[in-house]
Length: 282
Image 1 (tube, rainbow, N blue to C red):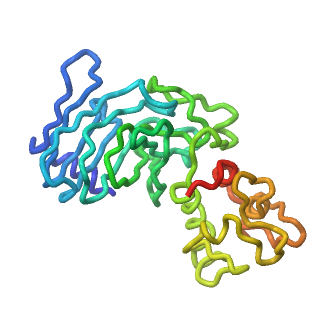
Image 2: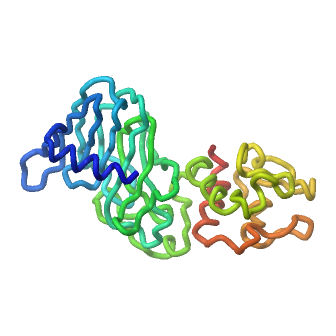
Image 3: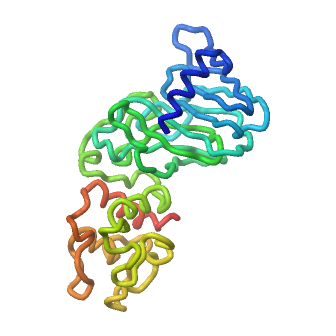
């Protein structure tokens, strides 16, 4: 990912990639020409950067980035991008700006196919960088709208001002942001449950593998240790054994809390809870 900054600097220095903001006291539109050799697309304020690697485009495209008020509530300013050409390689998305107080909850939010709600890009290792105030993600298409989201509190509307860091941010309650298994829950398992020192990787405890087919092994599946319990009940986090274990409150026959190395942070558990209560979106 570190190549992105260098790529952008070289492209701008050579002038091979046109990045021309409209002339105004407070410009909100930027035009970016990118071809098959690759390049960058940026907002006029450099908050949003899209890195298109060589081979991503089959022809030259003139991209337009506009700061928009016509978007669902978000933590930071929302940006509309057009057009949406077919990509041969995933685009790297970088959002720069003041991160949420609970840095771990920062996400890249996208709206595609005319949807009316945000969804988040998968949180990859190193995606959140507090040192340079960026959050990154990869996507197989150019979304219509991008914005930084705070999984704890997406307050702040579309004014570009960060949302308040009140009780919801401090408690890590992401229920007002769509949560998906692939983007938000699997990365938690990858970091805490399936590494060599954990219990649900190569030799899974309780016959529960969270490395491969984790979704299918959880949702609507009876617990190995007690058939009367269900690992995850879509829409009901309180009665889901997984949530009980993560909260260190498993029933007597439901095995030991997880992970065994110590309870996950409250904001992390809140993401899992929100995913279950939202009906376990894949």
